[in-house]
Amino acid sequence: MPETSLPVRHLFSMAIDADLSSATRIKGGPFGSRMIASVDSGTVTGERINGTILGPSGDWLYRWADGTMHLDVRISIRTDDGTDILMEYQGKIVEDGTPRSAPTFQTSMDGDYAWLNKIQAIGIGSFPEGGLVYEVYELL
Image (tube, rainbow, N blue to C red; front, top):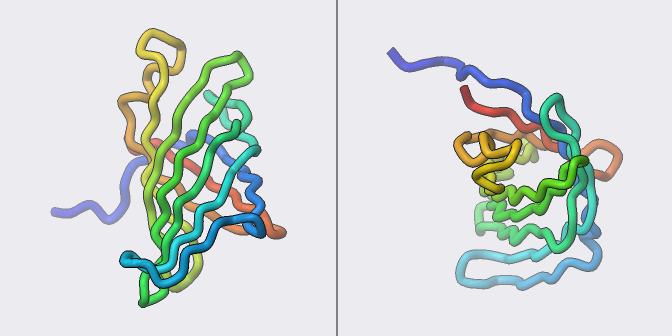
């Protein structure tokens, strides 16, 4: 019998600072209209991970003809104790405007955050007061 809910554990909240006014825009391309936005700062706050978002990071978003937006994001995170983590995700923004994503992580295989290399996460975004915030959950 299929599951109707999945077991998750909250991993962190991520507040992203992106200046969309300076984004590169390519209209009417073969995959739809493309927007390339630089993400140069932000924060990650959680029980097991706390840190800052470093540049260069960015989103290579594109909008299909039906209005669906496809996320293609790479984020560099430096934890408060100095570990660098690459977070990559793809996802969608559909009719209700909520970003949904599927992050994966890469970091040192022998460090304190090596467990991140083995997990699959999900992220649900929101746009409070003009910003972008994701709640990121580890699938158990």
